[in-house]
Figure 1 (cartoon, one colour):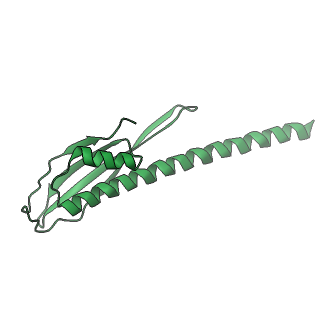
Figure 2 (cartoon, helix red, strand yellow):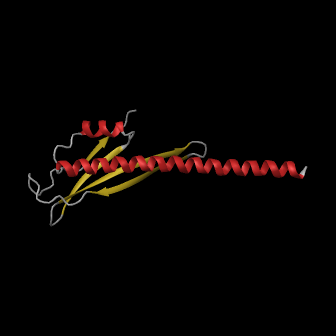
Figure 3 (cartoon, helix red, strand yellow):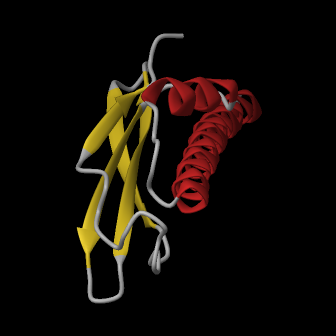
Length: 133
């Protein structure tokens, strides 16, 4: 009888570790997708020098990359030129436990020196909602 109880307890312990492992891998995959989306927006801003950020183009390309959350882009002036800040969100939920979360990832562009349009911030704070699967 003792072996039967010990075997079932060990089985439940293994199932618990497997569930934690699956949740952890899912969170890592969402986090990686969010960083890819953030890097895409930063690259787009740096290539266009902060000009012509069109919501439909950015969201369309982010949806192709399987990113469906919001992206917030803002600009700050420093002595050398504008620096753009991109904030992306990682949303996750664990329905069995009832955990819902939202992590914000903040990245900045390099300073954009002597742009052809001037050295001022062209873009005020904008939020792109790329939802709608």
